[in-house]
Length: 314
Image 1 (cartoon, rainbow, N blue to C red):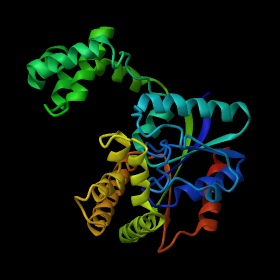
Image 2 (tube, helix red, strand yellow; image 1 turned 180 degrees about the vertical axis):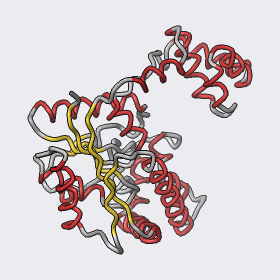
Image 3 (cartoon, rainbow, N blue to C red; image 1 turned 90 degrees about the vertical axis):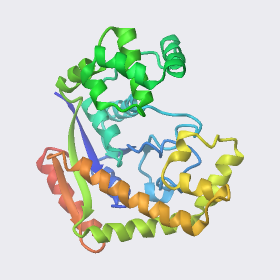
Image 4 (tube, helix red, strand yellow; image 1 turned 120 degrees about the vertical axis):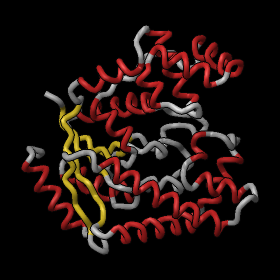
């Protein structure tokens, strides 16, 4: 039987951090962050990573574990997060997975395996050299002969995915489509119970996102970006492409004003929240708690507790 975990999900700025801590306290749990950017050190303001005060004594995992110069794949994240979950379970505690990166959460709960292939190895290097000589069209045509389903979903701009699909086939003899099909047919690794947070009125969520951005700026988002650059972080690092950091990098470089950056961050954050909700609506197992004008955490905790207790969490 799959081991039990609780997942707190929802769009950005919906109150997941506070709910996760409350549930961990109620059910003898520990929080595992499922956020693709909170893994990076020195980016606490821009990623809205929980402060020690917000953690309220509850152990948190997968926060500030990576150097910002690193680029983590979904595979690496799930491997590291899974180790945390297994350690929590071995100690008889409840893993509470909190975060808004839907792809990472789904892969973690499902125990999704990722196709083999030594990224950065000899096969990848040879393919990169071919890409430079022959162009993406030639490689995509080759992929179409091997794996027409994958090729049909890719565009010439998807160079990394084209290379990855060819790399997997050349190293394993199995197409990435076939690997993904087998992965989908496997039972979930964890028995997950989902608590979803959002607002009844979408405008309330948008207003809350805007306020959060203003707070980030007041707390020193621009200084945080400057410190990363001073520390030698390359401007093209994955971490600096995150919402907030990318826009304030332009401020640091003098190509945008702070006011322009703030408005762009708010817009991108609202768009991201919309994408998060679209992703989450595909999951019929989510028990939704919808806020009114402001979050009512005592009521929400009672609601979530009743749901989880009825499902056998104690």
